[in-house]
Image 1 (cartoon, rainbow, N blue to C red):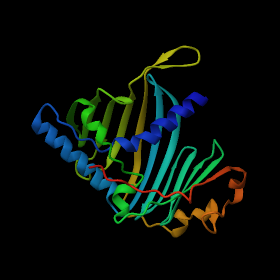
Image 2 (image 1 turned 60 degrees about the vertical axis):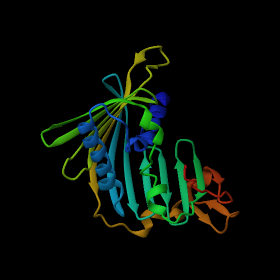
Image 3 (image 1 turned 90 degrees about the horizontal axis):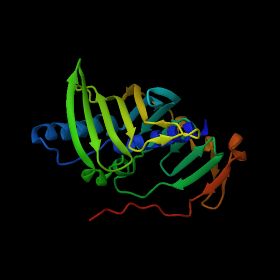
Image 4 (image 1 turned 135 degrees about the vertical axis):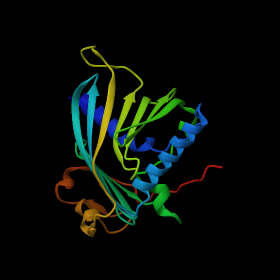
Length: 252
């Protein structure tokens, strides 16, 4: 069971890293359409000031579901609440709190100081420039008002990424992330491992309360040196990183 949980968290953690992909595709017209639609997906889902997402994760060994997790994401400007399986991330304007229930761990980080804090340090949107040279081929299809982009990778953790989305709203409906390496279980059986991510509900209109993003549900912060876990989290290992400075350095 532990190996299933590890794979589930690994895939769930990485799905958001793969939403922005730019590469020189073989056919320019379709390459332009794919590039354009991926940009529109990011704008539709991750640029709004307010965002609510319910998502289901199913981990497959071949065609059999081996584990499932549910996730929820709430975003209001720079504030964030994200829970995927055993992992919770809560962020207010000043601090970020990471909680791992299985590992009994709480980590407190300072938020980076930025002139434009929303776009570049938003946990929901991360641009991986190295993927530019990792794509071997891609294609776009459309059936029954659902558009699909399939991306094959020659490098990296995944062999294939599939995005299903609404061509009008550009909201994601479903993703598939196929691991490049074959997995061998403890009994030496061989499996092709892949994760299906289903977006159950997406809204950019939902209203949130401040309590949705309250880090004092997890810790109290008096100053950089005085941070304490509260409630059930008192039994967790606490790591305080508030004395560390987090900055983003632009690549030249």
